[in-house]
Length: 417
Image (cartoon, rainbow, N blue to C red; front, side, top):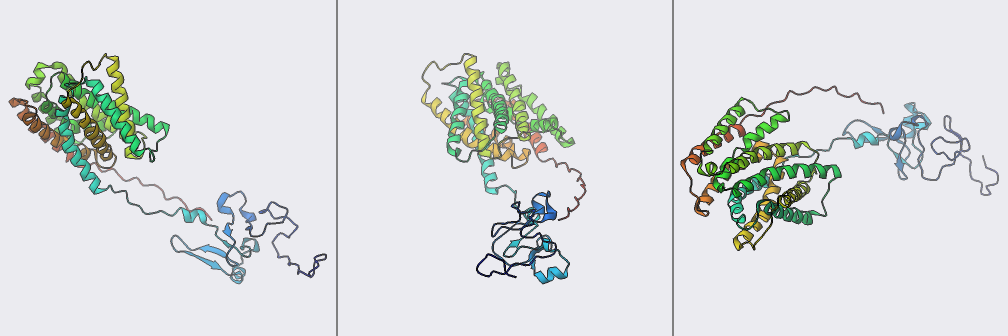
């Protein structure tokens, strides 16, 4: 047939059964049957089914339809004569000049293998940092208190560390308002209740070695804090908790504690608040990036302790000594910026018992530095309490993890294509 008025004798395309005509209107085009060249024809039977009921494709290819044989088995293209033998209606065949696939949604939903195992070198480096650095911060705190009041000292320290870390990671910093709020609350409570209380204890006359030994019960309180969130310790952890409390009672016979009951109250409250805030922070929606989370928490600790120091009337009345300035710089850069980042990384990547294993080594480092560099004199009480506390930590840290019963969920039925 020759269409009139064309002038060049172009043959008219015959109508196919089941296919809307050129002027009959195609539901897939929405333009009264006229479709722009190269655009695919949609499946009229798939209207209202979203992306799964539509044909999609590109301009290149051959006539045919893509069949999905199964997960991971690839695809094949059917020839028009094969489609006719299979009884596939014309409306389900691909338009000429297109490669089409109706199963894009299912192909994109295939699982991508990935590894969530933490970097072993980072874990070892973070553990060594906590073991050595945090064991030395007790003596550094004592030296810094020679020229700075306790709360303003920590406020300056954490504000500097948080601001410096943010400047280093500002291009990769990612956090929503809710995540920043949660991280601010957890970090403010952890640093004020942990580091702030230790600083106040040393300010009231508690020696660095004695303070580190008292803080060594932190893993025991971590187990109790985990129980408050639904993971109660087992029998072995309860035995360790009892031994740790006995060691703490013996440690209370140390001369520093007898001379300063206020310092004793501060040093006993510090590991309890620190442990609760540490476990609570892992249950909140905080920034996924450990560095972003650390920057917010360090800033929160600095803001909270600066406000507390100003409200309680603290002020720097005289120029601090050079040793106090060097101690402050060490606490801000090494003790906060480096070590606290390592602690947050470990709390979100390894078991809490391993993340708090610094309590094994910190008392030994603190006692050695306090006696050799700080000139501290210790009585026999600390040498009796330290072994008991270390045994308690070992019982808690090496306790077998509880096995949760596997939950059997019904396998979802495969939806028809």
